Image (cartoon, rainbow, N blue to C red; front, side):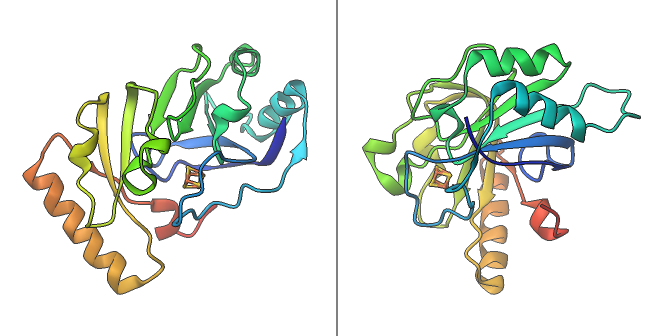
Length: 199
Ligand code: SF4
């Protein structure tokens, strides 16, 4: 598997926001979003066992709890296998996946975060996944998140887009908060890793 990076940090977004987790960022994506802010193009070839060992090394020995492993990308479904998820389970982790939803996922992941991009890219990016633990939709003030009302999700998060402009970002945060207040099935997701400047 081509792996971009493996690191330990706090989950910055969505339901698990603030939760310590080991992140496995797989390289490559099948979409080209104009606002993509992740560096996922390069990577190191690693076996599934090497990935599991690298994850294990990052888990604090003092942890009394089962740590969360977040497999992200890029688009992790391009490479993720049921055998890697199983191998991660064998060392005791819960495995969450962050996906654009255009490709099927192994059935043994514990948590699916679906972040569809078809509002910006059109039908070719329409998600094939129709069910997720959490739906996370970017908010740019110009596209209505109601386009994803048909997706069955236990939790729905609206996340203001990072435009790179502080004044514009602040305005989008206020608009997104207002949208959540008017549509209380949505909750606000802020990228806390950017706010506190951690990976
Ligand atoms: S789906 Fe995600 S990783 Fe892929 S291009 Fe879009 S924002 Fe970037």
